[in-house]
Length: 242
Image (cartoon, rainbow, N blue to C red):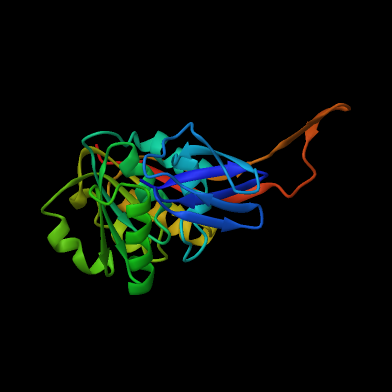
């Protein structure tokens, strides 16, 4: 079980029994290490042991591109209600943050990644998140598999690909009654095509939102919006098969 060590504004992923060498000293990780333990390097630096949680995956997964940020993952899960017992079809695996998060919520996820190297990294990330038994990463383009997948039916369909409209067109065949579609796109042009295709396909309750967040600065002088850039990440379209 991989655990997280935190201390001195540092974080390290370690395995039980591992030896970790840093400029803060050498640390021997016990075989029976548990979250909540405190470990000390040979130079006396202390590290706390934490269990990996969802937001930690965003920071510690090996990346193959820009992963979906935690707030957008939360929106997808919240808008679609992904939970225990659901079957999810996901396309555009990338780093795998969304697929892993949905699996940690209890869903069984089938995810497609076109780049073979990216798919291999995603499989390693699923093992790190301890969800490799609930996430199947397939190498390929989901568009080419729709005919076969339509016989299975899924509770939720999530897409983060440039050719999402081609899958949205077939969404009614892929989803169970009451199932949800969630499409994430960084570009408004793709988003417009997704919405138009969802309408033409007969999906209902179509809503598109820009995913944006503004941080607040809180200090002794007072509280005000941060002067850092506004946190736009993309556009999320959610629809439902009635």
